[in-house]
Image (cartoon, rainbow, N blue to C red; front, side, top):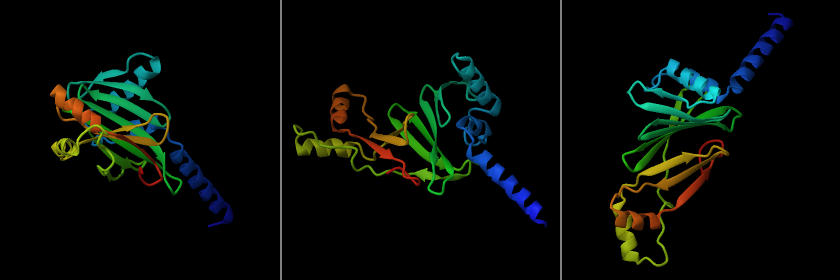
Length: 206
């Protein structure tokens, strides 16, 4: 192969890499495989984008017969109300090696909120599901007896954790979910909850 051919090949791969690295969340939303978001097909996702661009309510009926609304879309953040009881968020995050990863948070309310947090490559290969420690999500108020705190804490086991991606920065907010519907118990549980904000470090949220 001549030197000119080598240069042309290098230029081609360089331009290809640049095109991939500059993909917006809008483009990745459209390239998402159907098994990642089973309730919206490609045409429905395109329809949501069209409505959003028109400045009207971006709403479609999903394959499950529920209403989905595209609430927010920027170059690197997306928020979707997937149904009356579920929400999905996506955000582009910089990786340590200079690449870009996709973070997806799926939250279900039944009625307490519980979230799953996934990382994908830009080609939608699953990297893994993130797991979070429960430490730091509950704390005893100064005026609450230790015995009452321990009782409330044990009643939450196993913990359900809700997660929320920030639309403004590379942070993930975590909170323990309240499974109690009784107003008196629910109020006491809220008193011991803390919210933790984790920052993206190129590999995970810390």
